[in-house]
Length: 133
Image 1 (spheres, helix red, strand yellow):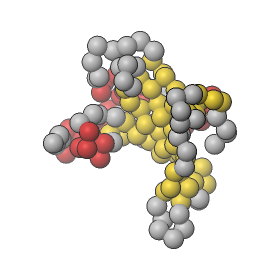
Image 2 (cartoon, rainbow, N blue to C red):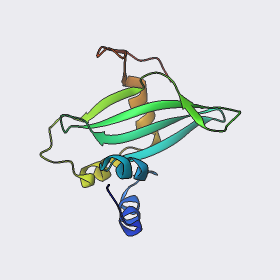
Image 3 (tube, one colour):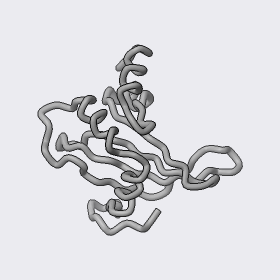
């Protein structure tokens, strides 16, 4: 099982810009370092962004919309979410520093622009234009 020290988490989070941070749960569960960010849309929903490497070692961003369940207070997501490849060049290895570097330009305005142009999966390997969320 993967592990990480608090000092390592703080070092990564301090290197990130625009409120990006290490997804510690994902790292401890799957052994991969990814970065996450949340943008509140209103009191009832938010967008969750995840900066990661895909299976082809390209850097991509995944976007999910969550609605707050009033009974539990937890976010609930429906559908496949959106994704967009940000760096098409295939990396030889998955390097967290490359993800951190991208956080310097991925502010809220840029993320909302990416969200407008990202594709959503139909669940059958087909990509279709996404609805605006």
